[in-house]
Length: 347
Ligand SMILES: NC(=O)c1ccc[n+]([C@@H]2O[C@H](COP(=O)([O-])OP(=O)(O)OC[C@H]3O[C@@H](n4cnc5c(N)ncnc54)[C@H](O)[C@@H]3O)[C@@H](O)[C@H]2O)c1
Image (cartoon, rainbow, N blue to C red):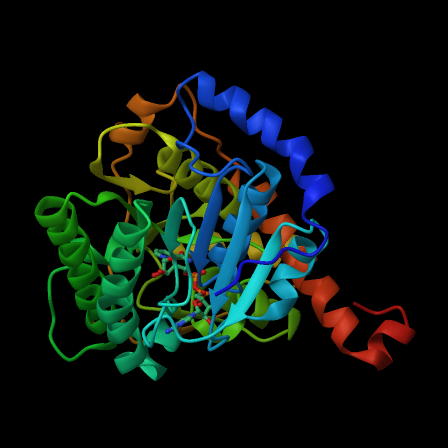
């Protein structure tokens, strides 16, 4: 694929100098092209992929985004277009990446991730993490580029065949095995990030993830659906924080193969999350308890000591602040999509 950037030259040059200065300090990716670092981001129009695109552009990268829009939206990359350093290709990563060339780093983030999305798109989830991962590894090898694979906390789950969350876990375990095989067998420069529950603007309520589901129920003035007792815990990281760590990890010069957990280790119960959402959305506290789901993790808290050792400090947006921001985004989006409400000034 010919890499063409609208209005590439002027805005880019400004950032390239800064990227080069960082490279001298030994923290940056080696640059093969005089223009600076070129990243391929699969899943660029998704929740985390679009945060990643924005973060890379802010650091002076040029970015090629690929997405089949199965769970993503072009609205998520509207800011990226305006930089003149972003191009987008709408296609299935599991089908082919042959036409793409000239990249320094490949971030493989394409994959459904919410519970409902993975259940609805089971075969696609397996394919994009297996065949899609293989194609990303081949592309990275061809380009002598670095590969960063978005794995998930689910790889730590006990396998429970034929349950939706298990398809996802198996897909991620397979994806990791493929990356490991390329790193050990072919010398691929590869990193794996095991991402823990992350929330923020641009998530979709239909995905089935806890924060978007609660916010959607709050904004519809419906009771919160809590499975089981609600005393099971989650450790929720804000998207900007997760992506900041991913990018910093991706830029480290060594080692050539590494795996880290990324997320927040501040644990809260599901009931506490619902309470906070109710408070910040300004709705009454109302819960509908449903039977516990057998494959629901009772406790999820990442061990972050590896990334804590790597970096002096890790960003940590307080849950209260992150939730307020996310609720505000949901209100904005709803307001802008519903002309009658927008006209009436209701959001
Ligand atoms: N959000 C989280 O809390 C979380 C936690 C752990 C891991 N992850 C991982 O991070 C990555 C991004 O997750 P997300 O939450 O942003 O999900 P998302 O559904 O918002 O984004 C995934 C994107 O990938 C695209 N996509 C899916 N299959 C594709 C294919 N075959 N070809 C091209 N594009 C395809 C979708 O259209 C979507 O834009 C995933 O790999 C996910 O497993 C996310």
